[in-house]
Image 1: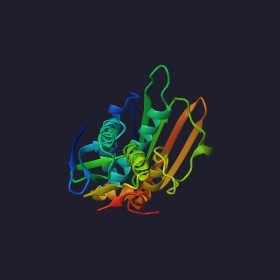
Image 2: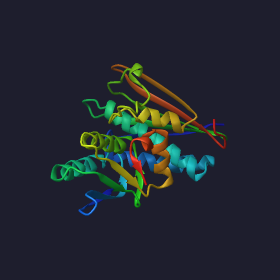
Image 3: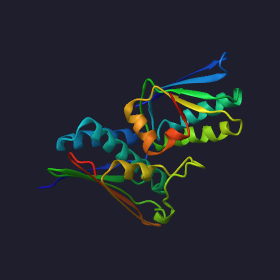
Length: 137
Length: 104
C-alpha cells in the first residue's frame, strides 16, 4: 500500500525551507532515523532549489512536490514546468577547477538510493528520488 | 528560517572571522555573498567561517564559498571552515570540497 501526498509550492526561495520541514515530517512517518531524515531534507531542498533556479517561468507558476510512502521506502518527485535543461550538461564536480554551480544534482545522487532526472528543454523537469529504509546501497 | 552573520578582522593573524548563525540556502545565500564581497573589498585576506551555530548549508551556499575561494586563491589566501556540524561535514566530504577548503 502506497500512501501519497502532494504540495504545490510557489517558485520563491523563501518556500524551500517549508518543503524541507515538510519532507522531514513526512519521511519520519516511514521510520527513517535522524541522519537519513537529514539526507532526505537536503536532497529535497536541492531539488526545489533546482526547480526555482531552472524552472522559473514568466507566469511565476508553482512547482509540485509529491511524496509516495511505502513500508520500506519513500519516493519524492519534484516537478516544475519551467525551461528545463539538458541532462547531458550534468557532470561530476571537477575539484581542480571548482565551480559555483552544478553541485545540486550531484548532492541528491549522493544522498538518495535511486535518482532519476527527466528534463526536456521547454517542458520542465522532474527529479524523482527514492530512499530505502535501513539499508545503504 | 534566517541567517545571521558577524564579521571581525583578527589583525594579529590577518584573518577574517565570519560567524554564520542559522541556515544558508537559496533564500539566504545572497546575504552571505554580499557580506564576503564587502569584507574582501575592505581587506583581501583569508576567511575563517565559524560554523558552530550553522545548522544547514546547501549547494547555493557552498557555491558562494567556492566563489570567494576563487578570488582568494589568486592571492594565495584560503577559506577555513571551522566547527562544522556532522551534517555539514558530510556535505563537504561528498562534494569533495573538504579537499579544497581548509577544515578545522
